[in-house]
Length: 392
Ligand code: NZQ
Ligand code: ZN
Image (cartoon, rainbow, N blue to C red; front, side, top):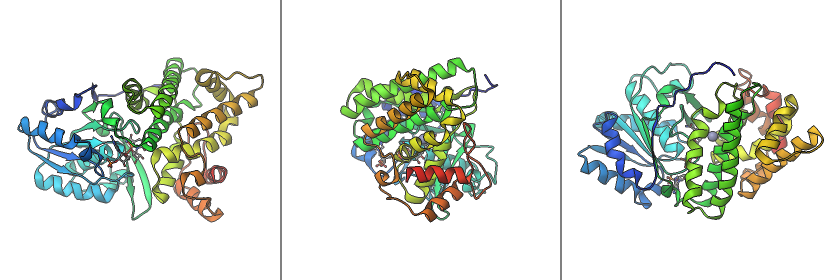
């Protein structure tokens, strides 16, 4: 087990009607003027925004509500929201929605705390983030895990680049998690969420680090629980127990727990971000598209890891290593397919891409040769190109 620091300070308020506690939570965490952020309108249509506003009014908390965050949230939107927040005097940022909204709330909090810095510079690492403002979340989709994660992902449309920023300042003060708030999700988004939850653990589980028993066991049980409840949720997205398991797994999968003491991988996430940056595809769908190709390309670097995955997660035990690994990869890919998730470029809806485009994607993914991706197997531009080619 490698040395680690585990810091997951987000207070979780879980269960039916938990959104009614939002004002008390904000006050408890020092908020006096609140910017409420939401997305394209689902939270308005479900009545959630009205409910949140009513709760804030009742508690005497002044607020400014700003909607319109898009999936794969834009840095330009966050910049505009920073100006509005400063004019309003907001000192607390509440994201009501999914990863896109919560990440935007985080970005706006960073921007308001650092008004003299263009916030994109924190994402490019040109500036170091040393202070921010408090953020809270009312979660409406089990997926990205932003409600407890130290990450926020923004897209810069002008540059065609999608980047994550990891910092303790990204940890929300609280997360309100009522599984019933996910009942209005379209089936596609439920499936995207299931994939993303699994991938946050898989991208940690596939590691070169040996002998990390408790972390491995936590990861494997999380994967089994998501597989089982993902099937139930896919059939019936109003199954409270299944949606509860998924929601809690979504947070545990990305708060750091399932990768403690180990080198993490996250290559599939980087491969997926490149597809979202270029084609604006949903995050979960980008991940199911690349995972099988990534696994087929990388497993030989540490076959025993995939054999363990086969056994502990899928109950697959065959006589030969290659046979076992291939069966496990096929099983994972067919699980994604059973959720109607894409497993290649054509199914993703972007069509088969030309060799030129594949090379551009690969080059951009490795920052034009300035980085490699992946902790399980280090991948350079040529490797990334081969994986995209397999997924094409
Ligand atoms: O915008 P609205 O109208 O709300 O609709 C959203 C959006 O179209 C809809 N939706 C959400 N809750 C709903 C609902 N529709 C009906 N009923 C509800 N209850 O779902 C769509 C997707 O929303 P989004 O917030 O984009 O989903 P998700 O939570 O999957 O977030 C994806 C974003 O998070 C980033 C991704 O890259 C992507 O930009 N990630 C953030 C991470 C983090 N901060 O830790 C880690 C992840 O790996 C990921 O990269
Ligand atoms: Zn993700």
